Image 1 (cartoon, helix red, strand yellow):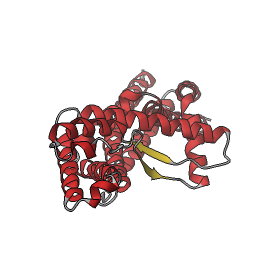
Image 2 (cartoon, one colour; image 1 turned 135 degrees about the horizontal axis):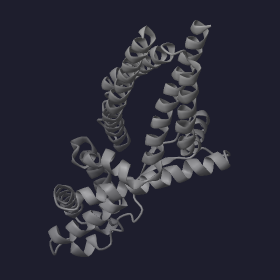
Image 3 (cartoon, helix red, strand yellow; image 1 turned 180 degrees about the vertical axis):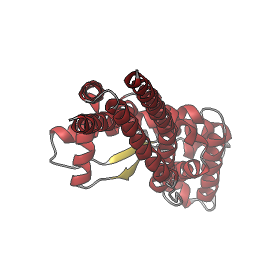
Length: 295
């Protein structure tokens, strides 16, 4: 009977640990998707990533170059000179002040738009959404610097360049299956509180179901197995690395994946220590239960 109770206790406590870990991940993902601060902390440092800055510069330059008036192209050497001015303006803008603020505004707009698209897709899955990177804040930086570096010769032509007020870059369009999974997951993680509640109930029932020593042994085993799962996950995350050369989409995606992996490594380190402490509580309980039994 004691063995059966101990096994039942172990099963319930394993479910409690699993629920707690899944709920922790859901809470992290929900905060990342629905609030600006976690995303800013995660992706904000990418404002200094050379891959990202180079890709943004290419997009800004090409967007402006494509809008050079035909009349300027007709003047020998003028089109090339304007391109040089545009390139200089973009390079100086991305090397000066305001880049971090522009990047934070970019990721906040992109985050909000992407979540809204997936929420809408969950309600109406008739067409898969395209994820866009909104570079409009960088356009404003480029415009300000362009005015400062332009000489009198090109100024009249630069005034005719309608640099995109809504410069966006496609990050990708997921297939229907991926979009469905992502949208449903975003809807599910909003209810992370219920997962922690379920973990608490399972843990309480599991401790009550076990025998005097069995419950603490089950707690120790469940905590150690949970910690082992976290450590395996951390090993996988530590090996994440993507090449980010080439397009803006590739550079931003690679940098984002690596930043997400680093953030999860930091978060799961706390989980591992908490589970180790929980295992320590189990060991102490097991020792105390053994002493009471001998008495």
